[in-house]
Amino acid sequence: MATTRDAVAYLIANYPHKDELSKARVTKMVYLADWKAALDHGHQLTPINWRFHHFGPYVDDVHQMALDDPAFKVRSEINMYGKRKERIELVVPQATSVTLNDWEKRILDHVISNTKTLNWDGFIKLVYSTYPILSGERGAQLNLLASAKAYRELNATLQE
Image (cartoon, rainbow, N blue to C red; front, side, top):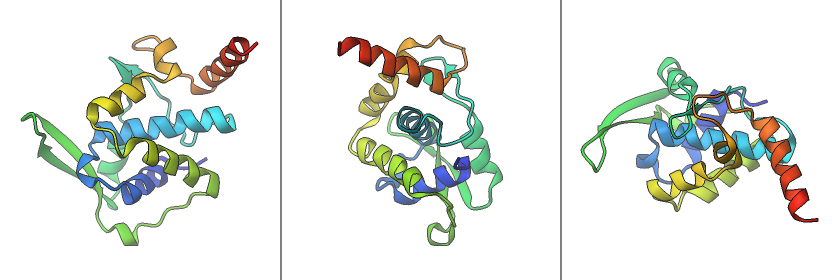
C-alpha cells in the first residue's frame, strides 16, 4: 500500500496544471485513485479512511500531511471567484523521492489522465458520480472495498 505522502507527491509532480492543485482537488484525486484501486485490485492505494463530507469525499489527511512534511508547501491564494484557496506544491519536485510500484503509478497516471482536461465543475461531477458517493450517506464513512464489491455485483446483474 502506498503512503499518502507518496501518492500526493506523485500526483503533484506529474499533474500538468500546477495552479489547479488546491487541497480539495488533490484530496479528491487521491480519493479517485483509492476508488480505482479498490475496483481493480481489491484494496485502496492509500490507508485513508474516507468520509462522505457534505457533498463528496473529504478528509483532512492530505492537507495535514502536506502541512507536516517539509517536502511540501501549502500556499494560500485567491481563486478566480475571489475566494481563498490553499494550493499544495512540492518544494523541490526533482529532489522529492517517491516509492510506488508500477500498478500504483498506473492508477495515479489514470487519475491524472482523466482529470487534467476537466475544469473544476467537470472534475467535481466526475468525483460525485462515483458509486461510493451515489450510494453513500452524508456524514458516513465511505467503505471503498465494500462499495467496489457492490458495484461489481450490480454490474454483473445488469449484464445478465
